[in-house]
Image (cartoon, rainbow over all chains, first blue to last red; front, side, top):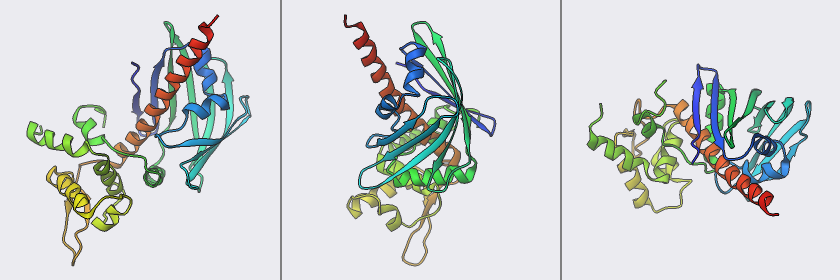
Length: 160
Length: 113
């Protein structure tokens, strides 16, 4: 069982780490191949990704559109900056709420770890206004929150 | 240090998705009970019970204003940043569970001679 670790780095970044029981090649590919992305990059249950464009090359475009039935949905656009297969993906992305959020530069690395892969994803922490917009639209979409207080009580995010 | 009794109450209050939804809405600001109830298709008595549980757990506070009783998060109960990080965490956790399954399926397929 691999547990996700999500921590903040100062006031500006979020770092996510997760181990997968598959070699870096497979995990790297799953982050670029539209057919694979459509099967896992869906967020909470009940969502689909009817449009998934990822050109998979430096300078290539990214466009993900998520749908929650009956016309409710939102999308993300971005560009790939740098690829070092199968170790590293650098891209920028923005959510359209529908106003675009500030560009988020995301660095994702894949390091062999025994028979598996340790993935690290470092991205910008959105500013307060963007977080509020994302939270509020997340709720409209029926995302559920939040165990935050519970987790703080149990020492989950001791840095704050 | 919270007493174990008040911790029990907090855990119980947060164990329910409707109540977590109410807290997520209140993280954005004060709202009346009617406004809070709108996204949920449950009876008014059942919804009032959820409000009471959250209030007794010290997670929300209510004030009287004419005939309405607007609710807000209790001070220090739940920060907006924690809310956001938790939403992200829940979305990514689900994503990577699905990716685990996908990777397992691929590995199995490769093992077939």
